[in-house]
Image (cartoon, rainbow, N blue to C red; front, side):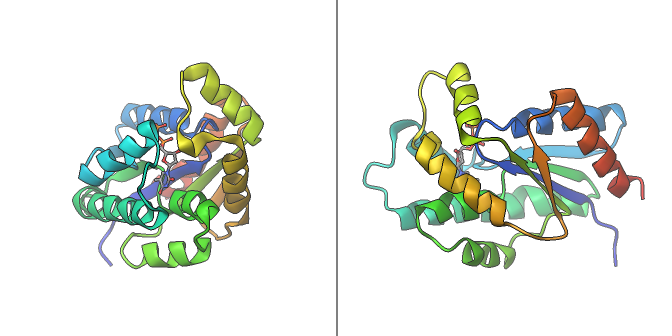
Length: 201
Ligand code: TYD
């Protein structure tokens, strides 16, 4: 088998601090001179832009089915254009949100989370690690509110509670749960030790 890079994904509800950790990991890998790319979903591509419009102005008359299909199209593009090419170049891919977010967020709108995961795994590589960050939805909302003026439709308390519940159900050898009640540096240390086990093996 040809050598391939590593895919590490950072997941969890908004306000758990996963994006901060993803950026710190990018800096750490740069310092170690490990080739890496830092990506995020929704992306800045055409589908991602449509999604971000819903995030700022609300769903309007976009149906849940359409919304789900946009997340999938956006991911297909990300896999083809960014993720697979980077893995082929043996890079570490740090990805801020992936299909576990679709399963949890769109699952909370009524779709079956397990089916969403299976449908994604047809075209999207299974990550070496999915770090699922957790904190209480109340704490997360407080963090979001202190950093932004308005909330998106994805950030309402009751909705976030359902999303968190679905994140809690995911199981698998590649899943590592990160409780956000520690300091940023402590969490960064835990992640560095874990990622080093892969890249230094
Ligand atoms: P987020 O990473 O929080 O973006 P920002 O940095 O702009 O805050 O993602 C935006 C929202 O999109 C977030 O509330 C979760 C939601 N989302 C889904 O509902 N399904 C998905 O598949 C993905 C990737 C994100």
